[in-house]
Amino acid sequence: MIANPWPKLVLLLIAAVASGVLVIRSGEQESDRKQRPELGVGYSMKQAELIRTGESGQVLYRVQTNQAKQVAENGIIELDVVRIKYDPPTEIPWDLHADTGHILPGGNIIKLTGNVIAKTRGEMQAPTRISTDYLELNTETYIANTDRDVVIDYTNNTLFAKGLRAYLKEERLQLISDVNGQFIP
Image (cartoon, rainbow, N blue to C red; front, side):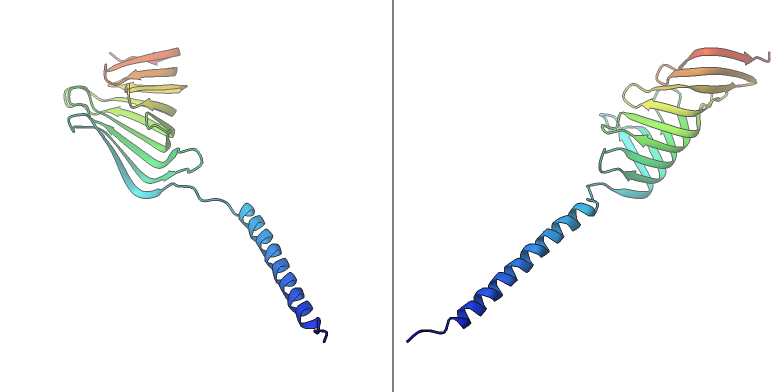
């Protein structure tokens, strides 16, 4: 007696079609994954305050921002409406403000952009105010740099310059070029 081959053939055909569908679907899912953006590790915070302390626990500076967001691809932290309070125990304290900022990976460099204002906060002497549109602050050395136009106001005196290096720990300003000013005795 010869067995009927049709049921086996139908089962074989069903298995072939099912495996073909699975292969096609897995290919579609792979291409879908390639088209969708990958979400990396990062974070976003509103009304954030980042505090750096010294070895003995004293606060060295505070970074306050309306929003902090880490870019996953490069590790840069983007800041919106930035305020930095530099409060050393012995030197003159400084307040820095800017429209935006970026903290580079490693956290040593903070780049401030847009309406940057750095101002001393001292009870013993008149405040010094520095205005520019870009400033880089090295938080390890406490040196602030810019190669842009700068306006410095101190008491009734105003200085204009192109470029500045501010040594915050040493309470010293170095103007780079095109320095001119108005001094009222």
